[in-house]
Length: 396
Image (tube, rainbow, N blue to C red; front, side):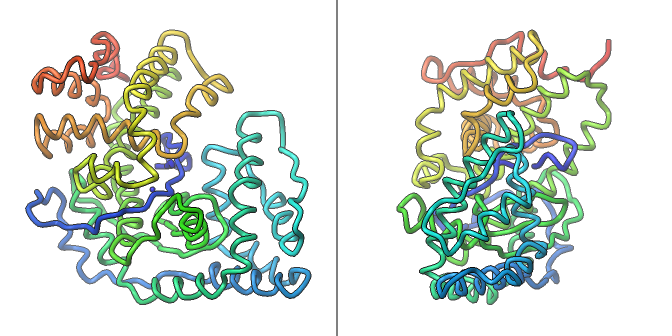
């Protein structure tokens, strides 16, 4: 459900998405903004190669030492490259570190993994491998039958056609979408789009969190929403990049534009697709619940970070640490809160204007608060900051 679209594109998204949807998608009564007619015949197969290879490795590790040939097969699978790439959006994780986890699958003790350097990203990388990936892999060893059933269920779904059609409904313009879809095991995120046109759903990460009671495993229609969320990122990134190419951004403005873009991308996909244009739906999703409760705090932090970026040139390690509260679903929730307010005031077409140009987000949000008379329950942003954001990259 972060992160996430991605650093591999020309703008910033640190979130790997590991969200689940509690309510199935229903398009009745919605405004169709995009044109999905060109995608009706799209029915491409989902690649499950990595998932099935990892499943074999998990089974073999129960009987003794993990098969080294299977370990190499897993490491060489493209799905594993996507998993590692996703973790490197907001962390630093290497193939060798991941190999260390796989080699120790038969051991009860967590293997020693050293950070690649002293940076915050490297620290996060090791933390994620230890707390999330290792725990899920160990759980997976004793739940291979369940994982196999869930992989087979996904193979029977018409994912590509349905997910593309759903994502396209909430894009402001028609764009070419031809994603490659993967099912994997062994990452941190439940779903992510770490590379251009490549999206994965992690059955193991999602199943493990379900077993821990932090998520509800998605029904087939909700798995479609997983992929639609990520496909929406791919389409929206093309549109936002068109806007960006016309701007002349200095380093500080570029960082601010990236920050705002992350809010718009994650907020729009979460609110429009997963939340069904309702924060109440999102609040029932355990991946969003806590950060939505902290909405006021995160909105205030958003203003502070943007001021620091533009006025004090916040960057590097200081920027990484300042944005840590947005990891997980922070970007999603702040963006969704703002877009819902704009939606209530100006409707979906006003939301689409924000999606075309994220710089409009803050002024539109302030106007919506004034129109809806939400103050003091929701505080507007500093007017000077909102104006400056709206004019990023414009040379007098």
